[in-house]
Length: 165
Length: 153
Image (cartoon, rainbow over all chains, first blue to last red; front, side):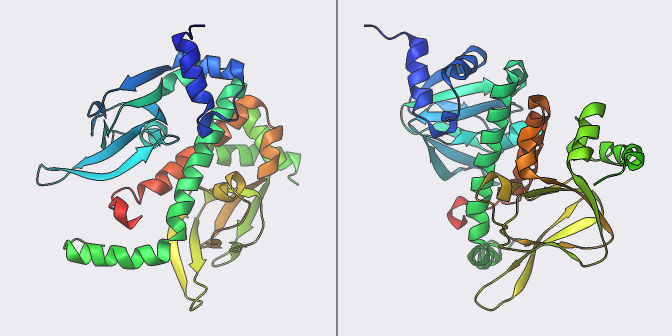
């Protein structure tokens, strides 16, 4: 049996932890208001300083986070894999993109214009914002657990780069 | 427990705070009834690190210091100071329920407190606002770290 494109994306959503609390009908809502997108290797997903309120969730693949430095060079500052959310800070705080995102390999994303979230059912919205908050809390916890060590590393880094701390 | 006669004045106060800016009149009334409003003097502990607690705090007035004590040398460090409109305790609610830092009032402070478990009893449209605004609060806190190179994270 041939799998339709919609079903293919739904299977990918189901396999991603971010979407685990959502039932079938709610996943259909996501695919109605958002969409699955496939990126080729080296394709741009987001450009730094773009004013965008689009949210991305990596379903499969890997992307690089690249930042423009003062010297006009681009520096890779990290990579993100399946399960990671992109653009959630800019979306929640209504700000510009703070980094560029480029696919490091063939990557499957779910993407959603944040303004469309309010068209979804109240139940799906509640779960969505709760998942997003849990995701951010985990990220913040990971950072705060290493605060003591980080403070030392940071002050060294800033000294080395001759910047105020 | 909040007296009915106090509700109107608290409503005015809460409406002026960014966390509750998108809550309508009925939602604010409900939120006040389901929670508590607490006042703290200068340098009083609002909650302590490692205590099991499921409370969510929203600062209505004043400022709150977030303090971490290191096991090794018992040294205390002020991690952050939060101001009016900021919320605290959302990490403990969303994750495992343990306070990862202590909260100390830095001056005369008024906070709104709600048991995180009660958020589930609110109407869906109010829950959405709670989680969305908690997310925004976390995003703001995370932004502090975003200028730092990833290898130091």
